[in-house]
Each structure stands twice: as C-alpha cells, then as structure tokens.
Amino acid sequence: MSVTPVRDLERLTRELHALIEVAKTLTAPLDLPALLGAVMDKLYKVVEPADLGAIMLWDESAGVFRPEATFGYDLAAMREMGLRAGESITGKVHDQGSPRLLATPEQVAEAMTDMREANRAVMSRALGSEALPRSALAAPLRVGDHRFGVLVLETLHGPAEFSESDLPFVQTLADLIALSIDRVRLEDEADAIRDAQQADRLRSEVMATLSHELRTPLGAIKGFATALLLDEVAWPDEKRREFLRLIDEECDNLQAMISDILDSSLFDVGQLVIERQPIRLERLTREIASDMQRRTDQHRFMVDFPAGFPIVDADPRRVKQVIRNILDNAIKYSPNGGLILLRGEVRARDVVVSVSDQGVGISPEDLIPLFEKYFRVKAPTGYHVPGTGLGLPVARAIVEAHGGRIWAESRVGQGTTLYFSLPRADLTEDTDA
Image 1 (tube, rainbow, N blue to C red):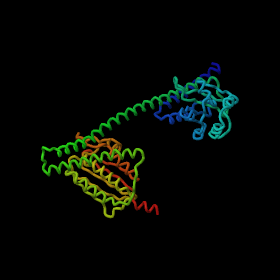
Image 2 (cartoon, helix red, strand yellow):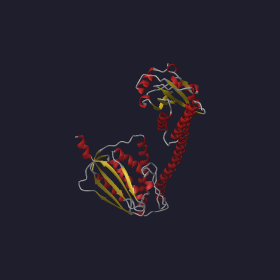
Image 3 (cartoon, rainbow, N blue to C red):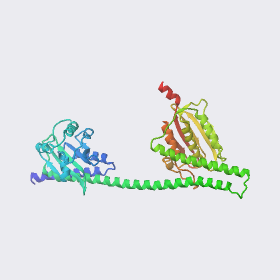
Image 4 (tube, rainbow, N blue to C red):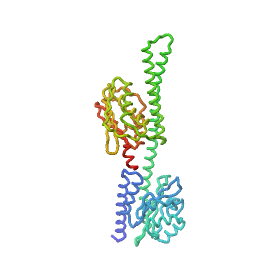
C-alpha cells in the first residue's frame, strides 16, 4: 500500500472519529448556547489543524452575525462583535451558501479587508494578538431554506493548514450543528404553541372559575334581598336579621374576592405600595381572630404570642390582609371545624406568625404550587371549596414585598400550618444607627 492511501485512511479515520464525537455531543439535553459551547470544546480536541473556531449566528433583530460559541477566542470579548451581511469571511460564506477555503494568509487577509475597524479591534482583543489566521475554512449552517449562520475554523500558528480535502468534512460538521439548531428551533416553536394553548386554556378556566365564584355570593345576596322585599310575606324580626346577616356575610365574601382580583393585578404590574409603620402584631392578630370567630360557629381560635413580642415595621392594612387570607384558607379546608391556632415566634432577625388548622391537609404534590395564582387544592373528600385561588398568592406577594417569606407544612388528614415571616423593626433601627 502506498503512502498516500495510508494517509488518506488515517485522515478518514480521524474525521469519522470527530463526527462521532460531535454527533454524541449534539444529543446532550442542553439549551442551545450550552450545546454549541460543548460542540466547540469537542471540535477543539478532535479537528486538526484548527487553532481557532467560532459559530457565528445571524441575529435577525439586530441584522448582524454574533458569536454564540468559540474556541481559541475569548468568547466574552467576542460577544462585542457584530458582523453585517456580506462582511468578512462569515458574511460572504453566508451569502454564497456554500463552504469556502482560504488556504493562505493572503487569501484570509483579502476576505477580511471589508471588516470594520471596530470588529477588527474586538477580534484582536479576543485573540490577545493582532495576528491574522494563516488559513480558514467556513461552512454555512443551513437546513433547507433556513440559514442560521456560519461555522468558521482557522489555523494560526502553522505549519499545518487547511486544504480542499477538508471542505466536505467541515461542511458535514456544519450540517450536524445546523440540524441541532433547527431541532432546538422547532422545539422552541412547539413549546411556544403549547404555552399559548396552555395560557388560553388557563385563561378560560380562570374566567369560568371567577364567574362561578362571583356569581355565588351575588346569587345569595339577590335571593335574600328578594325574600325580604316580598310584600306577601311578613318575616319575623329574627328571620329578617338572619337574612340581613347572611347578606352582610356574602357582601364581605364578594368584597374579599374582588379585592384579591384587583390586588393580584396590581402585583403583576409592580404597583403594590407598602406603607410601613410600627405595629403590634399580637394585637392585630387578636383583632382579626376575634372578627373571624364571629363568622363561624364550628371553629375555635386561639392566639399564642410570647410576652414582649417585638414591634414590627410593616403596613398594617396589608398584614391584616395576609392573616385574613390565611385564616380564610384554614376555615375552608377544615369543614368539620376544630381548633385554629395562631402563634407568634421571635427569631434572631425576624418574627414568624403561624396558622395551624385541623383540616383535611394538603398532599405533598400540592404544596409546591400552593402559592401560585389560581391554583386550587383539591379537597380529598370531594366537596367544593369556594374561592378564586388568589388569596395565598396575594399573601405571598405582600409578605415578600415586606422582605419576608411564606411557606406551608401539611399532612393529609392531619391539618395544615401556614407560616409567614417579617423582618424585626428593632433590627432595622439598629442597622440604620
């Protein structure tokens, strides 16, 4: 066997090995930037005689090519580069749609004569030298009618340089990369379609839920008011008071739902206003518990705060809203009544309020999305739990706006405890001093 066939066999073996390694890398479950970065790391190790390489992708919004992954260049510095259509090696190969060999330093320099000075300066900084490549191979990244950019490989030190025999190999590498880019593009489009469909479905479900939940108190108010207005019925005073009490309760429910909906909208656009002032959290908690006790005969409220509980710098109206929402949730999910315990705890840097019920509990999988908008815990007994699914998300937004956090612990059939923390006012004053 002559020397030339042996060398050809060695070259083909190296190329096959390189293609296998690149193909394996492209199957990794990574996002596009990480995937292309991994590919360039692999190319640096398996492609000879390349000293430098870059994947230049076309940025449609900016109208320029930008480096997405490199080897031999400082990628952070290279990100300042923006090549226009037709500019330098990348622009020309992209326009031509076919691979190109620049076999000598003179050919490289000629292809780069139209590179703008700003881009030349970026290239020099990224390379740490003003030297130009000795040879270069560039291949378009395309799949069908979709053109994504250009793969550029360059030699810098010599003596080895690229030759015509390297063109098919580099184009095959470019095709593999382009297929992966196209796969990610199609997956992103499919995800966008699924997200849009999911958003539409969620929007429909939310509107149906809100319509139903708002209609329920309105129907009750309308029914009791109509009964009171009947001329042919002389209601006893006790029954009239009961109807008026029920109307008042349903108005409170309706007001709470509307408040949660409006507050949720404010949080979404970043317009939540917190008006801080010193508050006694124990006193505020007892007031709310006393008010909630008047609304239920099945539950018993107990407040347990340690002596000398510190003053908290917070918005009293918003903190009341947090506690009310949590208590409302505790009542709804303990339909058989029981004790609801409100406790205060003083920690090193904050205070914690907890609300524990003896209700149906929450499954572990429901604890994760518990504070997401419109999420509703499914009652294990199958009964309908009224509400908009906004009470706890609103509470979370308020607590986080104060610099605290909110969380839950629960076991199915054994009740739930919701906690929220608020920074201590005395620590704030010490820090300011």
